Length: 331
Image (tube, rainbow, N blue to C red):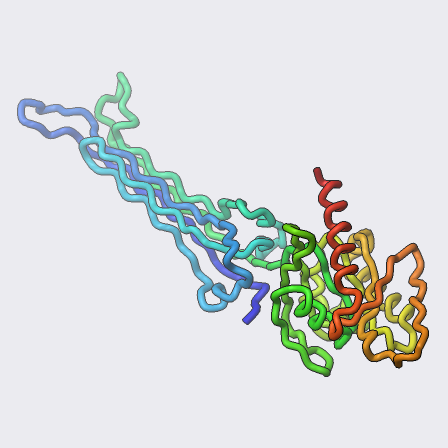
């Protein structure tokens, strides 16, 4: 099951109390203060785990609590700090404050690690308060409480190529043909009910990651169909590949409608490099002289058949070259 949103409560550990104690040894009738400090409470730490690709673990557990710090003891023995609570999440997880919506962390790098709630500081024992004028202090601090937060987690998949198209336009078939992904494929709308990622190899040692999301319908940007819930999964892609059936009555109009939905959802997505693949060319009559439509703005267009494999190699190599250009821009 693919889960891309979760709401949980995290509570960092409280600090241990400082100890008030005095040395009581033979032949030392007036020993000085010897109370040790309390240990610090454990932190709540989120780390990226590349083996995860869903937030389903948080469907069954919504409360996470780090360990408390131990109390200080006599003979200046300090309490041990509480263990941190390490919470693994998928790459691409965004963590927000539930009340304000403020983004607390965006875990988009493989080595990302962030403290979301800090443990409380341990209290000072009375040994810390000894001075030349107060050699027998009767004061020890209590440990401070750890931070408690209610947070929202949102998963946005990280991929190089995002597939965009109406339901049943051939996205899943393409992904299954050029990668090792195995999305559900059938001849009816909304076969794809959750995002799928596939690793596409090209050249000798190169590869890219392609994301397939449920088909877009008009009104997707306001939640119609599977709308907003899955459009977010192609927000971070470097290139958008629009898939349009070559047997459509008006491919250019289809492209325009898809572009409008993308733009209504996020104007930034319209600035991404994009190209068009006209799918299902195997359904054209053998004697038909098919002419590629002009989608304007110099949009490069490819005619493909995922069933027969026609045009796939050329498309994949072109996608690879686009990704390499985009990566060079970030260097």
